[in-house]
Image (cartoon, rainbow, N blue to C red; front, side, top):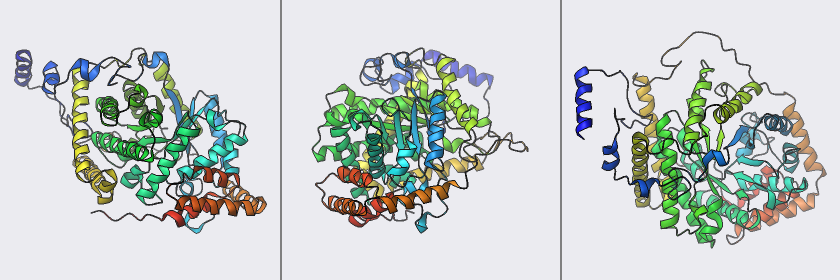
Length: 548
């Protein structure tokens, strides 16, 4: 301690202190210097809390060899317009080195509507690909080697229905469901907390998520039936600690529902996965990932009684922070994304998406998407970041931040428990208010000049934007609607009606798993709108109250 005190006195005497907030993006004050006294003050025990990579509590990573044993999956989120257009983008990305696909769906698909319904007018293909029936899914997956490439689908409210179409299409392409590897986002709790793309009431939605977990456990052993997502919570304005706490609390809730269904913890827990935001505060993000692994391992082992070490593993995908992208000086986004991606790599992600530089302006152009892939390839092959496992392990600062975020997460767990659990907490608006307050605080600090966004609050230039904007094929929506009409006209109408009737009956019976009926409806070429409206009638529709 004497050495640190002498250093503090010398710094104070010299009066050298740069202007600036000296705090994390989450407003946690950062010390000028960290040393062994900070570890002691937090009660950090290296043997208990750190260990070695591949050993509990997995603070230093779940694999002993890190990226030397297997590189992270380079996965780009893609989808726009028609199934034909998105299929072409998928094949282009695979040809240029992507090793996994992530499907983005348009708003009608995300909300379970057909594009010719009045409520969906003008939204086809705008933020992802439109999928209205098995016919679209078959085109979307054409020539994609589904037995070799893991596919992630970012879908939540109608996740079970879209997954059913995916399974049906894969089997029609000759790939049995047992060989399908990928991830269904399917995290409905974060929709009520942050993104608001929900359809059914919370408890009915949780029943559907549990159906998918059970079905995957029995039928698709290589599939991650849920990706428990902090990304959208962070994009809504949360702090790093809030992102971690609310995401893990959601994860614990899914575990409890699966256990109540009668599944054994070690049957399904190894296939649970996570999805985090790679935000701008470099060291805080690295600490967040390390804290997440440690908490999950301890809770799955000690609270839920998992005995299989793979159940203790937190496997996660990371995506760079969309909310950090700027529509001015968009080339600077390349720098932001590269550093955010590096934090995810040093934090031990298993899979990574790097945002394209033009995403604050429009859907990514082909060149921008390819540059985003190249960013990951440079990190993997040219920086040496993959050479050592957890190279920042033991850092006084990183270990202190890891412990701080872990403590803050447990404080939130206690508050959620006091409210009666995560569903009761979100119904009361607790996480929503916490996130709103954090977002307001950040924006106020920007407005008052306490924070800098390069090119926006400072270092602005007046120059034209020279980024090519991706243009839609104006005839694409017409072709899609023609196919939808053709499907309705040429399918076996009696088989479609029968499938929807059986689906409604399964939805009304809480003891029934709806996935077999959903796959039957997909194979009968029932449309997404027909399927979802049948489920709305049986399960109800949720209207979120206004929280003040």
